[in-house]
Length: 440
Image (cartoon, rainbow, N blue to C red):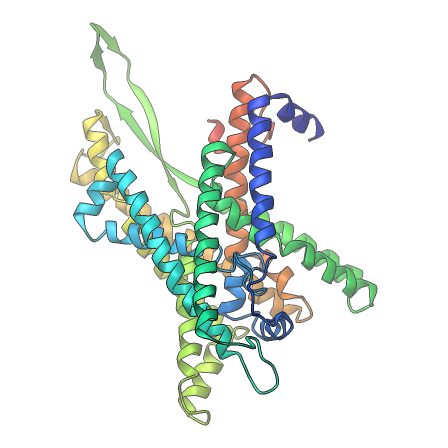
């Protein structure tokens, strides 16, 4: 490993990209610790200690603790992610947007529209955060001592500007650094919680609240979960494709054999994000029902974060959204048409509609085990906290769920880019025996 790091630093271009990326990420972390003016941080911290397993706790995870601190980067990059998802979903509904997504000039316009949508969403969410902070005021604690109109406008403007700055910093990493800038910023926010999780576990051991055997089981289990997510991310189903002989410049080219790689988890982390948003709606709705209502009590018990009913419904929703998101992002007809135009065919399958139906059938079959596996990974933090109630939420979040899938996916993508630089400069790959898919 040390040898590989030395080789990385020997390549001037790669060294410059890595240092540039680290510098930008450092700026992102600084902004996550600069609080908004007019906030009582002590009262705010107490509130989030009570709400870490709620929607606010999940949102705070993506911002690396910036939301809990009411920092200028409290919204993180999530408004940009939301705008990108909305534009992508609109592309599956409106043919005009879908056509723009396939054209270079169209993609440039879509990028511009996404930025405009980000500004709008960030401003709207900034106003919402200001109202949310004011709503936490009580007789005992004032989170916002002076909830004037100036506070609302200042909070909205500051948070929207912070999101726009993060979006610009992410684009700078993508253009001048290494890896995907937006993804790395999200990953950095998730990783920022890991040192605190380690410290909490060390304190538990030091105070004698946990046996060393249990602690070892927890860390071995975490390594196992990471390995499982790597397998889920890298697993593919290959469909063999043959290309007929062709005459090129008076010469006959031999038959070529290739394959279509279909990922076991084509939807990535999106089903978990959608499912988490849906699963928080019932409890939110229950808050508007009378306190002694039977319906309120039933909903809260059914959708309790630690209940088995919650885990079962959560898995079913993830399976549904896996099929849904795969259906709107992967079009078998386009793949079949591209094969037909390039002279390729699947052995035993007629070109055209039959090929599209065959590919769609394969995708449907591999999506079922992929979605079940994704669902199991998603509820792993719940299972860990069910088995070991003393485990902190910060540590349990790294046993699965959104955070672990994002960490693995972004880590593999960044490693592939670094490895490409090493191979291009005639060095061994960063993972010499890793056989990353990107190397083939």
